[in-house]
Image (cartoon, rainbow, N blue to C red; front, side, top):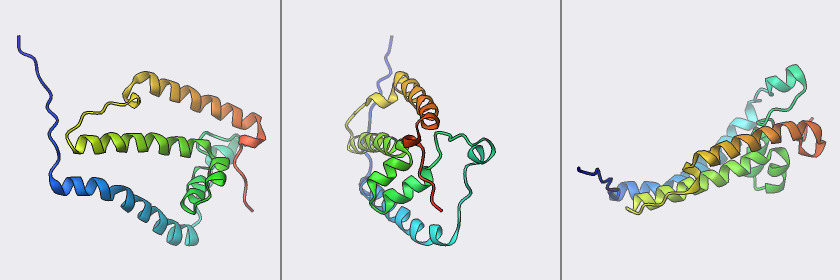
Length: 142
């Protein structure tokens, strides 16, 4: 019987350069977006909160990202804990992507179904707790 062997081929030179430019371009785009779009456009509020008064797990994400772009990590955490958690997961995936670009195989725990089920349970618990304890609710700005 023959086995299929998966060979990871390294990316071409321009793709390796793009791997390193990706985070800088993302941060630059997010900053420019916050400068020009947030100043002139008001984003809609959460429909679930408007209809029921219940905070969903995503309530405060826009304000959290805005605070993070402007360097206020504590305010970002105060608005929504899941934004920082998601960024940590994205950083781990990016590190895995960099390793793959140079032909190394790095498989992290993020690909496990147990990780995603645990993350789902944590998000649901967070959704319940942020409606019980006011300290987890996002800060309302006037």
